[in-house]
Length: 172
Image (cartoon, rainbow, N blue to C red; front, side):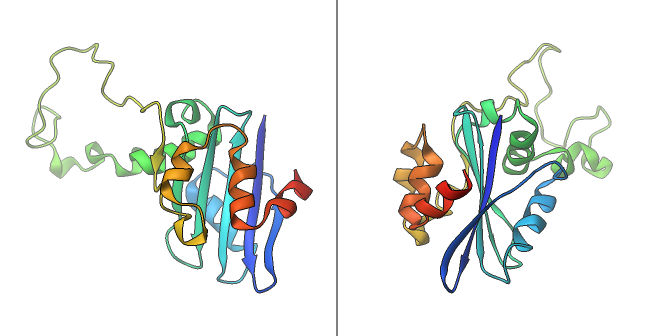
């Protein structure tokens, strides 16, 4: 089960709203959803799956979204987590194999070592740990060290540090 919420910073402070992610298929969809919540202000999207992982997406106006995922391996096994990890780790759209000009005749990228066997499970492996921009909330009062140390009930702790604990709990 997922919990997803948007925290939008306004002139009057933080406003929270729970959100449905049913129509979200890409990070761009998620960023558009966040931008609809406010006018060129900071929006932080919280996504959590039953304490297994959490993800943060920060959208500042029209800037590119910044992403942090607490446990990439766990997140990659879920549909919404896969959207975030694909963005951070490079997904199909960023795959150099999609550019035929960059490939040698044997199908490998120029200068890329050729695999030694067909059963190489390490290629494409997702790390079991945090990935992304661990500094995305530093200017809002959540230093990198604190973010990396969070595990259970992380979203509540982050919201408290932002001064938005009560508004997040109201939508939870």
